[in-house]
Length: 580
Image (cartoon, rainbow, N blue to C red; front, side, top):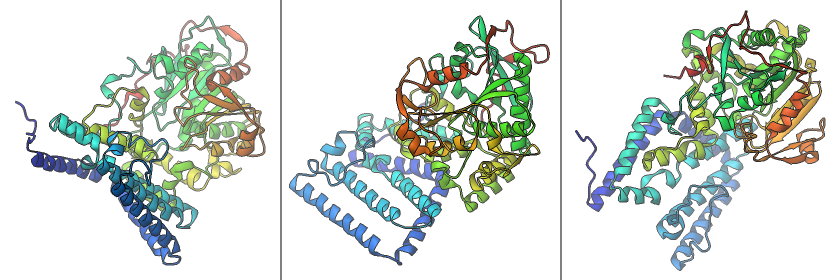
C-alpha cells in the first residue's frame, strides 16, 4: 500500500506544507545533535556582551558599519544595482550561493547579502572581544558555527534551489528528504556517501594478506609479497586507533598498503580492536606494551630480522613515539627507522580541535566517558565534522534532507563514517596528559610501561610528513617533533589536509610537497628555505625508506611462521566490527 504523504497542489497549501516539513526536519536535527553547540554559543556571547560594557566602541563601530551596509544594500535594490555592485559577497571557496537565483533574483540576492552582512557583523564583534586566548578561540569558533547553521541555504523557504526542486517534483524531493532524515536518525549520523556501495574485503581493503597474530588489542596483518624479493627489514604500519585501518588500504588505485608491497617492502599492519564497554580498563600503556611492542616482536619473528621500520599516522604516531621512548630506555634497538605521518608529539598548538580542550570541557567529557566505559566514536566524529561544518554537516543536510538526494559513493567518506570507540582509561590519559598538560614533550613528564620517557632519547632516523592545510594536527605543531627527537631527521610538507594530503596515490602523482628546508630554526624558516616538488610525497618517502630497509632477500613463500600461523584472511574480523 502506498503510504507516501499527500502533497497539495494549491500554491498556498504547498507553501504551508513546505514550511511544516522543513520545521519537522530541523526540529529533529537540532534536538538530536545541536544542544551542546547552542549552549556553548549562548555562553560565549553572554560573556562577550558582559565585556562589551568595558569598551562599547567595538560594538558601536560594528553596528554602525552593519547599518551602513544595509542602507547601501537597500539603495542598490531600489536603483537596480544590487547584483552589479554587491555590498557583500561570499568568501572565495564558499560554494553555498552558486545557483544563479542567488544573483539574478532580487529577493534571494537580498537574502544572501543581508545574511553575509550579518555574518560579518557577528564575526567582527567576536574577533574584537579581547578575551583570554582560550575563550577567544571558543567565542570565534562557536560564532562561526552559529553563522554557518543559520545560513539561508539551510532552510527550504530561503533556498531557491530547494524551492525549485520541490515545485518540479510536486513535493516528492521533500518527502524523499524526510525519508533520508529518518534513516539517518536511526543510524545516529548524517550519511555522507552511499554506504551500500562498499563492503570490506569486496571493494575496500583488498590487498591480499592474512592475520598472523592477535590479542585483545589488535590483529596483525601480513601482506603477500608481489615480487620475488623483498627488503630484509619488514615495515610495520601503525594506523590511528581512533579510526579503522583501511584508510590506508582503500581501493587498488589509492591503497598505501598496496604501494608499500609493490615497492618491495615486507609489509605488516596493525588492525586495532574496536573497544566495548567491558574493555574500559585498556590504557595507554596497554596500547604500547600489548599493542605496538608485541606487534614489533611478532613482526621480527615472522620476518626473520632483528630490526624493522615503522610507519605510523596521527594518534598511531603519538603512540609509536611513546613506544620508541620506552624502547630507548630499555636499550631495545628493534626499530631501525620511524616514519610519522601528521603526528603531534608536542600539543602546545593542537589546532582547531583545541576549541574543545579546556579543563571544564575535558572534565565533563571524561566524566561521561568513564560512566559509559568508552568514548563513542560517533561523538568524536561529530567533533571533527564541526571543524568543517559547511562541508561536512550543512552541505549534506541540504542535499540529503532538503533536496532528497542520495549522496554518491565515495570511499574516504565511507571510511569517515565507520567510527571507532576509545576505551575510557586510555582516552582520559590521552586528553589530560597530552592535550591539557602537554607532558609528552617534557623530558620525564610521562611514565609509560614503568619507564620515565624522554623523546630526545629517540636517536634513530625519522621521517616526518605533515600537510599544510591540516586542521587536526597543524603542521607547525607537528614540526616540533623534529626538535624533540635527536636522530637524523627528514621533514616533508605535503599539500592538502589531514587525510587527502596523506592518501595521495603515486598512481595519480598529483599535488606537490616541500623538502629540504633548514631544520633547527623553526617551522616558518624551514618553509622559506624549502623547495617545492611536484607530485606525491609517496615516491620521495619510498626512496628514503629503501636506504634503511637492508638488502634484498627472497620473498616468503607463505605468510606467518611456525609460531605465528595464519589465522584468517585480511582484512580480518576486528576491522569489520561497526558501531550499532
